[in-house]
Image (cartoon, helix red, strand yellow):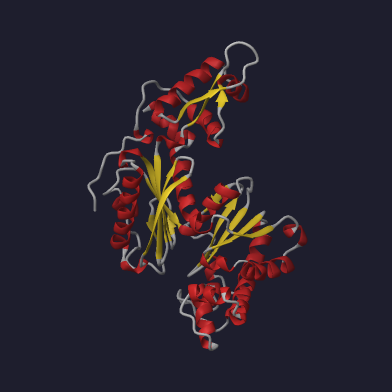
Length: 402
């Protein structure tokens, strides 16, 4: 593990001058548009002198800066200011059961660089997190950024997480991780804010931020080694009372009767429609497949038996999602995870059941689509989780008043 370095990022700085509600004014800039003081005064109803004072405070934090001049209607052209997303960086990690992707982004979520590696979540938290820290250190060095420029670190894990503490809670495929202090361990190497959530939750955040920002109600469904979903309602991610909201993989489905799941129950969706489950079923039918990746290889090769198995998995997922549509009425269902690479073979099965079993009113505008962020959804979402936290109005005002 590397030696901790003290962060000097804006989130921990204390610029001279204390102003309240500058944080709210800053939220306007997060769309990336440059604006003049006059435009901001008109948008907010604040006096120009008040706007100017708050802009000065935000400039002192390093969050905004000059962005050229606007067109003049006569006289000196007014100057514009804009968000400076490169003023700090975010480390974002998507840790799965067998893989790890660590990315470096700016404050707007733009991906600067990334590192991928195989991992084994069952190896325990110290082994896996040390690997993550090593990749993160490589990213900072390659980009020429220091740990002192970190605004924060976001991590997604393949199991239930108590978001308030960042500690995994009875994760079924993560031996040794239960109640492990992930933020505390990472802060032994990087002295910055560390946020942790379930991997599907951050995928939902990433997909929505990158491609569906107008969708207030969205489900992101991950179909891979496991099956789960991230639920966005009214524009807010729903984690539930104990962080298990969206755990679709352990809902009983009709075709699962007599099939036991790794959770100990019978008939779970994950036991018949996940990558390993499909591979086992094909192997029993005389078509050897070890895991989901081999199933996908068979699909890409045009194997009819594998294509039919993927299509049926889509129907099984659709069985559960039809209920979700009736309860939540989402505008968009995004299908992600490794098996989403099967494309329309999987999604067609989902649509077939959802559209036939849900009320017409609930599906009249519903879109069921393949993830556009694909393998980077988790990293984008982990970055968004951090930026939403450190760039919140309350956090910025606290920095200004400290």
